[in-house]
Amino acid sequence: MTLSSIQARHYDTDDPIVVSFDDGVICDISPLESRSENVLVLAPGLVDVQVNGYGGQEFNDPELTAEKVLQICLAMDRDGVTQFCPTFTTQSFELLRHSMATVAQAIDEHADIADRCTVLHLEGPYISDEDGPRGAHPLEHVRPPCWDEFQQLQSAARGKIGILTLSPEFPQAEQFIQQVVDSGVVVAIGHTAASSMQITAAIDAGATMSTHLGNGAHGTIRRHPNYIWDQIAADELTCSLIADGHHLPTSVIKSIIRAKTSERCVLVSDITGMGGMPPGKYTSSGLGDVEVLENGRLVVPGQSQLLAGASFPIGAGIATLTENAGIDLGTAVDMASIGPANIIKHELAPLEVDAGVDLVFFEIRDGKFVVHTTVNRGRIVYQAS
Ligand SMILES: [Zn+2]
Image 1 (cartoon, helix red, strand yellow):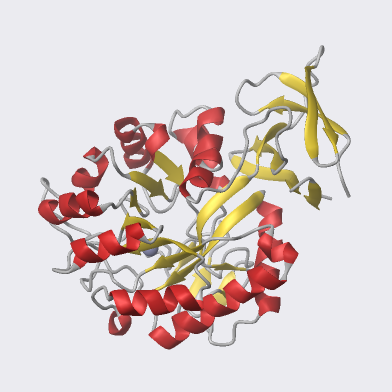
Image 2 (image 1 turned 180 degrees about the vertical axis):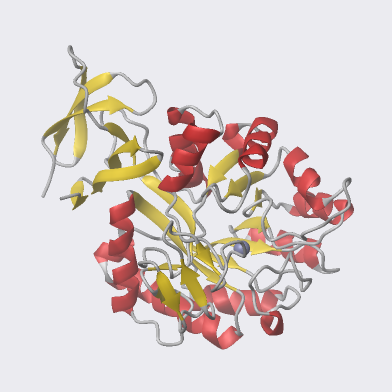
């Protein structure tokens, strides 16, 4: 199904508009005289650079198949996500190689997958082994950076690894970061217990990103200096934030965005394979025993405080920013679309004539990001019933 024309509110200007399409491309945007009450917001499709899985399926899976990859890709349509990075967390070399090779081959062989993802994100295994910074990554598989291993994984991934999240706390980190950056991969600092000097050295070596800043950190740290302040202050680093209302207090999100500016902040979901699952207890999730609460929060079973991972799509972050953090809708949407698209060099035009059309029609209702229609490369791929 393709689009001909639609009435909407422009996500950035809030103006009522009529957008006309010709063969999957915007051919006209005209102002709409009367503002109808229930017109939806029209925005560029959402881009999520950190997606671990969805609907009960992780990308890191010894049994992963192209069919399972396709299922995750199609499920992302429901959330208005038109481009995302399959993300692979710390695991054995064999499992990482299998998972990434499977996804890379699936991208090359299925147009429906290639339309939705092209770049892979490797998060680990070269991260801190300390409790807190390590997060939920399995200790037994955490290891120091190894250029030889990374090259083998990159070749298994058919050259599609575009983001590598690591900790720069290892002696060989500087040289390793330089090599990875020279090979065309974005290096992100994350899951780290690095010192100020190590953070600075990583930036000098070419690191340009911070992964889910404020999470994957010690519960208690020295007030200053510390690796959070260091990364907030570094203009060279664009940080990703999990703004799902559970991972970071609103005051932290607001402070980081104000300090770094919205141009240097992007939203990610970091959603696990438990994303999109109905409330209940699960035993064989790949994350160990977990529980999805009635409000969607993913926790260690039997309590409500200790998070077991993220389970909300990236749109939830847009709602958090606009409803609670004083960020205007246009800025919040850019942080979940244009901003992350730039990081992975994915072409995503703002709403303008001749722009290719990855689009989402949505509203924010009762504090929730509600998707009505998702358009991927000019095709309607999801419509709410
Ligand atoms: Zn992480």
